[in-house]
Length: 409
Image (cartoon, rainbow, N blue to C red; front, side, top):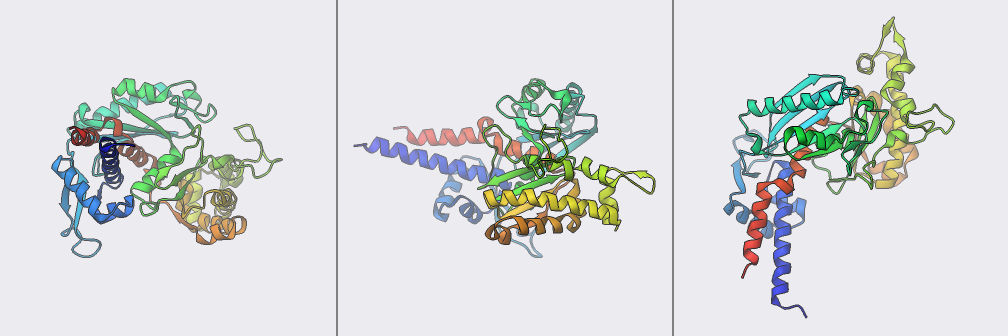
């Protein structure tokens, strides 16, 4: 029969785990009340109050009074924040045609950011070098030392092999084939780097700051040059066994349809991606259009462009309906460039979900546009760094030290 020592060890483990859960919620929300921490963790308010008091005594958590900021409405009162003003995280976004970087504090405030236009698809080495230069620039702007950076989150516009830190598709990023991207960036920055795909980063941005902030189960759909999904289950990303969860752009809609770059036929991306829409619309009044221009013309009432985006919305909705049947999300958040067309895209997408998903899932799912479009992946990379730097976070190490101290005789 286990003696008191084992029982104490079990209690110490539980308290340590509960402290870590409180810290994770603070990292996710930036600032939050004790009552909301209790709701998010499922812990009692008394337990949360005790844990917060211990974290305050350890110098890890501080109060901020938001009454003045909410004098004219909203939720007033005391909020909690992580108390590490000297520590920051950095996010790096490699788009198809740009490199972007942002630095943020632990209260989720973006302090500085930089953007640089570049053909990222084919100039991998240069893109990494540019990112390293921008990294130095943003740190200098906010007067932060390299040693104050807790972690770096990084995104690429395609599938990611997280086990090896490489790009998962040679056709999307031909210049990155065989490159151990995370390791290359770590070598340049001398700081741990986490890598993620663009759709998952969009989901993290919406979870942390946007349309998913009050929702723990949702699917984020990025509808742009490609089509992908970031899936959040119980507040965490679903990545799958090899990191390809959410690749709905390669859902087969027509086995006899056009060839897709993935090697299959009739994938969703062959009929509803940016390039497919551009090819379908062709030229308007002698103008060769881009996807951005098509979205702009559709918003202005151009019938041809509106029809092309509406048809894309219907096809995307078929794939999303299958996703709804599988994971039954509370919300579907549509981001990417196409989302800027609003109801032109969303209304037919909702109709397809109603037609093709099981009734219980279709009737309850809330389909809405994302809050972020241009900065979604950049903010998502910041969120990735905020959520994923536990191993090197001095705050977490101090939590562990606190737990170890109380387990000593």
